[in-house]
Every structure is written in C-alpha cells, then in structure tokens.
Length: 435
Image (tube, rainbow, N blue to C red):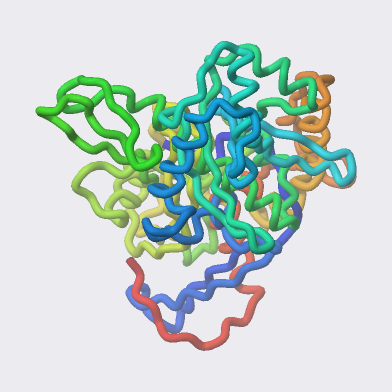
C-alpha cells in the first residue's frame, strides 16, 4: 500500500522548509543523531494538537466525562426551553462523517458549526429525532476566558431536515478532506479546529461501525460518555475501545547515490509521487513492518530504520475511522526495483534536485485559497463542484514533471526533511538510537 496520506486529490499548503529531522552521519546507523526543527508556524502535524484533549479531567471535576454526562442527563430530562447550563455545552453535528461548518468572507476562514444544547435539541425535534445522552459523544473540555466548556459530537445522518434548517443560517456539512485542504497553515486556531473535527469524526464513525459485539454478536451500548462501548449481553459484557489502525509510512533512502525511492498508485492525480506505506500486521514490530512493506512493494531490502514523527489520519474510509501514520526514514541495502503491480503503478529512485524542484513548483497555497473559497460558497448555498486536482504548474506556466503531497500529509514532511537536511547546520546533541 502506498502512502495512505498521499491519496487525496485535493492539494494545499505553502512553500516552507517544513519539519527537519537530520541524521548525523558522524555516528553509525545504529546511533543516528536526530535533529528536529519545526517551521511553517505549525506545532504539530495536521489533525494533531487537539486543544480540547490536552488533558484528561479527574472524575470529580465538573468537566470530566463522568460529571458532564450526569449534567447532560439532567438537562435533557427538563422540558424547559431555557436551560441554565446550556451555554457551557457545545455540540458539533456530523452527517455521514462531515462536520457542520461555517465560513467568514473576511480572510476566507472556515469554522466549526458548534450548536448549544437547546439549539441542537430544537433542530432535531423539527426532524422528528429525539436527542438522548446516548447519542452524544464526549470530545473534551477547555477553559476559555475563565469559563469551562464541554464539547460533544453527534451523528445526525438520520435527521434529513437538518440540512435545510442549518443551511438557512449558512451552515453546511463539509467533507473533512476539503476542510483539511482549506486550512490556513499559519493560523493556529484553524489548525486546532481541524484537529477537533478529525477527533470528532473518528469517534462518531467508530460508533457507527461498532454497533455489534465482535465476540457474541449482541448490540453494543455507549458507556463513559461515548468514549467506550460495551456489549449489552450480560454473559459477555465485553468493553470495546475506539479503533486506531497503525500504518508505517517510510521514505526509503539510497545514501550513497543521494536518492529517495518514491512510488505512485493508479488512483493518484497525474505526476504525483509519494512515500511507501502499509498497515502493520499482528506480531510484527514497526521496523519489521517498514522492511516487509518495502520489500513486498518494490523488492528493495532495507537495513536501518529511523523514526521521524507520527500523524493521526481520520480521513480514511469509514470502516477505518482513524489511522495513525508512523513515519520513518529507511536506508536501502539493495537498489534494484521490482514493482508489485497489484500494489503500485510504478516506483522509481529520484535524486535530491528533482525532488527539490517538485517541492518548489507545487502551488500549495493557491490550492488552499481556492478550497477555502469553495467552502465559503458551500456555506452560502451556492457551491458548485470543482476539480481541485488540476495540474500544478511552474511560474512560467509549464507543467512540473512531478510533485509530492501537500503539507497536510506526513509524506510531505518526510520528503522535505530529506531534501533540506544538508541546508541546516545541526547543533550537537546526544546521539539517539534508531528504532
């Protein structure tokens, strides 16, 4: 499997040096010195750095899942239209995996469409749907200007009337991949919103795919404010935890010839190349998965494997609500490529200069602004289908010979780190052992 994070047909970002991790070749491969440098005004990868999950409240705290669920049940049991603690609960609806979204004309910035508890209850009632505590999923909490807020997610796919109701106030349900591309990478608040949306989608979609117990087949019920599920069969009573599918993604490097191995799949947009990737199999280590996947897809034998970083990836199929991309540099022991055509369309060695040109030519910022404008139109109800996977051009108007995934994907950072590693003089650090 080629990079899961490189398959998006929507590309964005801006020119940057991204995240650097430089092996210090004064040490042998088993003691590579990893130098990490952040730029792009990004504290973490896309979908990481969720501010409402920065800590887990203690059960005694009012904003903890346990306490918040008790308060929620009390509020929902009242028939009053005005709920005293309503403003402290914020609810984010999802429809078929798409979070509710709004947009502002100034700066073309999107934002999540949080609803109050009373508004959410009212909208659902108009669609003949009853809001219950079991339908809400605890997402986290945050203190804003001295006030504690609790955040919830909810799947409203069955409430068909919501689309028109919320459209009247210029809210709409937008694909998470589209929001990913529309995000302004220099805006930390927007990056935080993206992380929250990704976490919410992963949990909501997991609830939809874990309706039955995998042990006995009985129905499951949500517990711990939707953060877990449990089998309803008393003789089974198994607990089920949110699903995370780990994936290794690696940039295979030919150090002697200063080249990197990139591949492409038939589903990629023309001329896009990316890192190799694959799911971890039971009973193998991360390093073993890197070596196995590289060998299976390209016939290349890998020796040393060095960790780079990881990225949550909640934009895969609904059957896999959240993949965890675990990035590595992998150093080739052999160089002859034998492509597995069932996995890849092609795989080639690319020299550093060609890959550097691919980074320079790609119009990531233009794609980001175009997609942000699309989101604004969608929220206004005038959005039309657009093909955002058009060819990337150089400034002269000529087609670039190749390009790589945009900065929303960990593949971009693996590749750009390798391209630029010799442009930064590292400060001496204690050698770190490669894994």
